[in-house]
Length: 300
View 1 (cartoon, rainbow, N blue to C red):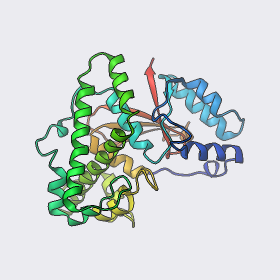
View 2: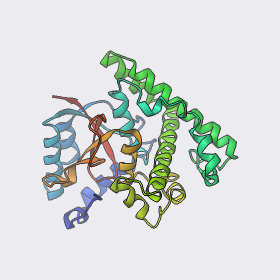
View 3: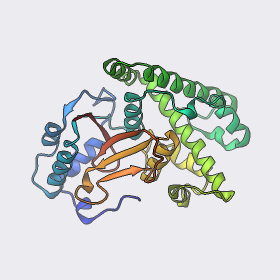
View 4: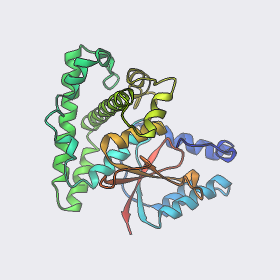
């Protein structure tokens, strides 16, 4: 379930090592757009992978496979939010209704309810700001959750595909709103993790990824998960493989990922979760290294 690494993945030449490093570390100063305009997938592949090394050939072959279904690619800003950004962008771009779980009356009061049970949540780090008092954290996260619901509903209500895409593009050029949405997603992931942890402790059936999530030395319980992982997303780290499962399970979306460095293997197309519910919508991402994600668009 987690990415395996073979010798070819590790032994990349200097040119491609620099390329991977550049892709993963593009900063906001180098790349202004959160989601770049469309570009032909095959043209992008030729531009990014010009060499004749085994890795370059594998990447081009992977892009050719993706191009059988999608004609274009949109590059996602390469910071530590890219997995959240790519997933949310794709979900909103095709949204036609508000998810059921977001319609719940308890949705806005989720931070207040969780903080009343788990005092350690007041250690939540809001966009690299110092810890606040419990009430202030609750109020601010509530604002983020309401903003997420408002934006999701307004975009899903747009019937015209062109207008829907324009509204989605506009949202991802508003830095303040965009990063507030990521805080909402991270908090929702924490809520899901707490539910899964409690279910497992109470003998209920949980997905396999939940065992893996809490089998790590750094996240043996939800408190550690928050402190060592969720608080770091967007700052010192991105989403790890098992956290992609958590994101998918939280949104109740199937995340389909073309993992280009796994081209010609059984892991080339990976689904998070691996056994999704049939009625979950599907979003599709592309990754070259399981760290940075771009989005394919325009199906044939």
